[in-house]
Image (cartoon, rainbow, N blue to C red):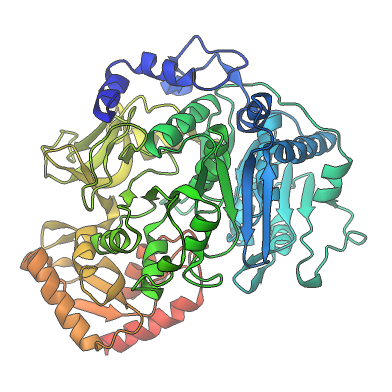
Length: 630
């Protein structure tokens, strides 16, 4: 079946379509009710089914005779460690750690926070929670104690599972001290803090003087293995916090049955990964990509997944990504465009790529932010593969727009995020809720019901869920993104709605401007934001990072980029302000902090986001902006 036929079938015969997909996974009790109305009349999938996500990820494959297949490859250049873990070994570690959690009194219906670096024990913890029906909330290790405390108070975990430390390039990240600080700040006090002692650089946990801590490894080793606990399809597998416009994070709640069905479907039909192949999502378990495509998706599909600890462009050099693809015979990879741009900046001629055998490598997916055409072209030229830029959200849990590499589909269209994935009935609306014709920019919305695997709601806050996602256009999910559909059905994401700027009454996309700026031969990376202007309301302002070794002066860059944007888009854009910076401020997952840049340029008070990769960049930008104003 072709992708378009599959899509139409999923919209016109949705219950039959998803019942067929649900048959691809193992249920303890097969669902008879495919689609129904849940609490507050929000649609739910497979309500009467029972299953267990950990069983699907591990036990099922062992029962089918694949216990000796490698489930995880752990590669940590920052600690010079490599390890291969088979499904048999994974089951032993996960089931015994689950037994340890049981011995501490944790059971189905409890919550646990996991705050860990990219190590196998993080996967053991997540899967052990799933094994028992404990809802896990993984908090990205880069979050400060204050942010961790907010999440503790929101989901009231019975336990926090953490590690003594993490490593970022050469820097030690103090995980346990952060947890202890968060514990003191939080009103809710978890009963247990379980710590994996990494003993990095001779630093050890002082167990004698901290009796309130539980030793992760000892707990695992002394415990009896625990069996998988059947849970309802609608049982919350996890809570994952995502940024909210009000500042307080939103706890996206994911079900078990719909999610497992969607992941099996997506990894086979969208990513085109075959069971037994190596799949690498170069992300962190703290983000949705890590949940869906490092932990659950690959294992459910019996792929070998990679847990990578380090930064692929810095540990030790810009060739690390290609080394991993070659060494582990990776078939399909998923990363953020910012990672490819960083590699391109350090190795513009692709010298590192030539050193490695990439003959097994078939498909490159990109997501997290729009990928500019210049980067796509560089990748295609140097690697010989056309990357697939696709789009989804923490809320969806799996792709909403993409091309489908597991079935017959159309080709890549530059700068597009592809076409709607089966189950996502996507429309482009104007402000009044009328559907727009091709080539008109509007709001990207999705007709309810969302397909299996999408969010069930916001933890403990239906009102916020309703007003944030469902109220603006009744009967539709509001994505918060702007988009344009072309005559062939391809969709182009123009950015968050607040990344659309209004210049003298003209709604202009900063993404389109960035596309033009990044086309300059000396620009490695760029960002365009709208800043306040007395005459026009807003005007665009561009930040550019130059390629290594470029000789061009900043004045020349500014002049040439302004001319290029005028040529590509027109004088209406009025982009006249360009400043050259050493690097752009980003989150640890690689997203550019546009709001921070806007606020700084507008000269307003700002808070340093808790997700920022390196706070030192704030002073660098201040100095640059002050120079530019003078």
